[in-house]
Amino acid sequence: MKPKHDGKLFIISGPSGAGKSSLCAKLLEACPNLHLSISCTTRPPRSGEQDGREYHFLSLASFEAQKQDGAFLEWALVHGNYYGTRQSDVESLLQQKKDILLEIDWQGAAQVAAKIPTATRIFILPPSVEVLRERLTARGQDDASTIEQRVAAAQAEMNHAHEAQYQIINDDFDQALQSLIALVKS
Image 1 (cartoon, rainbow, N blue to C red):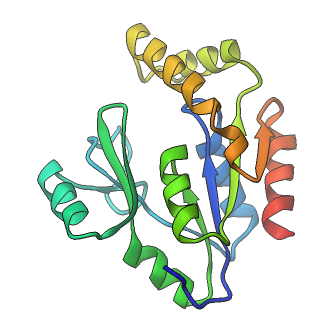
Image 2 (cartoon, rainbow, N blue to C red; image 1 turned 135 degrees about the vertical axis):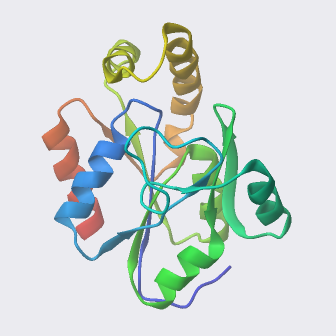
């Protein structure tokens, strides 16, 4: 895919608990010309989530049908659920010359970068595995077993941080946010 556009594509990746969602939310507030591409997922909505706002929530059958049709720019199986970015969603924004933010895992980031080599990849890292574990626990969303699974997955994901052009350690949220804003605006 070689889109003809003036918009830029930014890919934010990082393990669960690194703070990428919080950073992305604040980044979008600070950069009103940046548009979030809404991913699809087969996982059920969490409390307060709304279809079409946080994700497009799809049934497994619908996701697999779209996957078979080649509708996804990228997709991955993460923590037992499918996630993916529809190519038509990204192409539509790029054709409108809009800058786009994708918040996706490292696998998806690699798939997108292979198709759109001009994309800027940014990997968000926690300051340590222990801090990551504390953050995941403080969320109150998962039981201890799930948290340990997420920590193990995070350690494997962090091995791919070097694949991104930029890495930001989210030790101090405001500092990490300022670094992220500077990258997007540069």
